Length: 358
Image 1 (cartoon, one colour):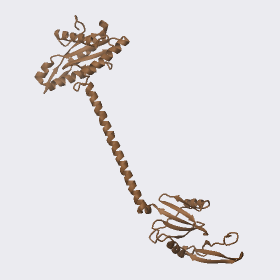
Image 2 (cartoon, one colour; image 1 turned 180 degrees about the vertical axis):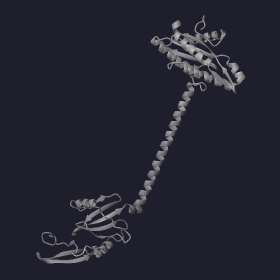
Image 3 (cartoon, one colour; image 1 turned 90 degrees about the horizontal axis):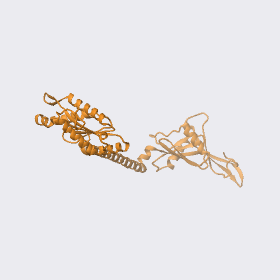
């Protein structure tokens, strides 16, 4: 190590030696040498050996006052010479991969650092020393320090902020869902009759006007069926309004079961219903009306405790193909007139003309 070629600056050289007859750590020594050179004349080398324990004491005295991190002194072959770890601490042992990474970095720089899973290692080559000094910061040491305290506080603030964001998102989502549900509920109430679940009068008229205009543009027929339950007032008087509501709901479900998907059914009065049949001729409307009448009359319904009764309905039919008129109010008026004609002729029947009864 000490030669004019290897040490042109005539500085102190440090190197490590291992006793040939012992592999114990205490047998390892560190030799400091300095050339004796006067007027360019090389007289020799002055050397002094230090044991590992002495080097550890030197290291401890050099880092006195440092409370964070562990210092480790390695030789050029990555053999541990001394560490500042106390008796109760376990010095960090590098893996083969980490040693190889450090050795590779030593060839390019005089200082640097690598980040491990729970540690950060910064290293620096010492002047005139055949080795390297490592400073190791462990995660738990950083947590105990001031920086760790600030980091933990910031992490808690971030977690609290994240929790508040998540809670706010959940609250907003619930509010939006409730508003959407409320909007759907209000929209449903605006369009449907709560008891029969058919279209209410306003919604039926709006849908019917659109259907009439569409059929008129396409030159298709459209028909109207007016339905009125027979003797409904007597049901309310004898069995009460709850029985009357049950009859209305029952009749509405029977009407819905006998019309087409494209047809429009609604409740337009107390016990009066209206069905709009786009594209249906007068004959088709009469067939559908007869199916509805027969379905209502053939089923008995429970109206009180142990009391059942068979209800009936009178129906009036009108169609645009009778006179070519596409006026919903006029068609409904004709169907309504024929409905009362059916009642006058004995109820529980379909009337599709002003002169004949089916």
